[in-house]
Image (cartoon, rainbow, N blue to C red; front, side):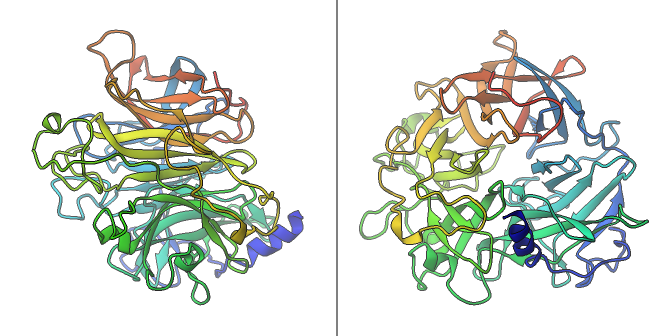
Length: 499
């Protein structure tokens, strides 16, 4: 089985071996031949073997996120260490999404490297996303800027990045990286792409790194389109696909999906059907394609129109389907999300998933309500090796219409009475533990019991089977630091636990 999967996977990783990657400050980069560039980074510290969480700092007064930190689990406090820019040297380009490879050799991340690129008042989540790989191997001191398409650097990593399982042949180790990036299909369209880090083996220059070319895995060059697989037909050709995750054996992906037509349509079509974001599962094997919806996007509550500039005068039930009104703010700007399901993540054996559901029920911490949800994937068993999915035998919407109904159940939902917390961006542990971690954003919660000491953003561990939860608060050098976008670090010397 493993040999078959490796052969199948390697066939999808084209690329020409490179003698050396060009420097990122080379004025001729990028080119169609060079799929990445490299720069020296001496301001990176690899996570320790007993570090289990990686997260980004959460500035309260500025837009975006910040540098990366790793932490040890000693609940309720986390002893955290800054792993990028630990010396304090100026390096203010914020990281917004990231993941660590299973062997802890690399971090893939998306960073807002070029500052304000979208004519807003400051750096925010709609600015250009530069895809970077940080080499954590001893003595390497390298960072690679990846993803080149036709001689242009790709605006990649929208909503998240994900490693697939590492594979190898006689010459290379391959680390496949999945990410979302814009396409030319429509004005706002995005697809999921794959590009692999490639490390030489068994040669004098065995540490040499190169990159394969970029492959679109959700929109093929020919054949059935993703929208057609999802039953939307060829008349609705565009789509926005972000927030990717990949199954442990690498043959299936999860992503957030909204059709391009829905993005510009009134929030209800002529039949009264609500349009919102859903989770799809798709095949990563371009020779064995398929896709299906896994969630419905949740129940949206009866709305009344509210054009008032004050959210307090609108009440708890309001009509802002794609967050277009100026008082729906996050870090000083309109959030770029519609209601529905985001940030999916497989469990250890790809039989369940967790995700974030954003609802129009109320505003919590000045953003749409966020619940962390759990879904059990249906029979027949589909996650082993290269076995086929019964695409025609599953009705994904049945029962999945509310946070407490059907197979989609809330494992951590905010108290709608106004506790000031918002929950999202969940990540299921791998390598043992079988528990989920997610971010909690709060303008009321304290990190030490003193009401004036606001937590703002911190991790929470949840046992999906029981709903038991543990709040964690990160300290760097004895000082509390707000942290967000938390992820498990695979492997290491400590197995994740749910307490």
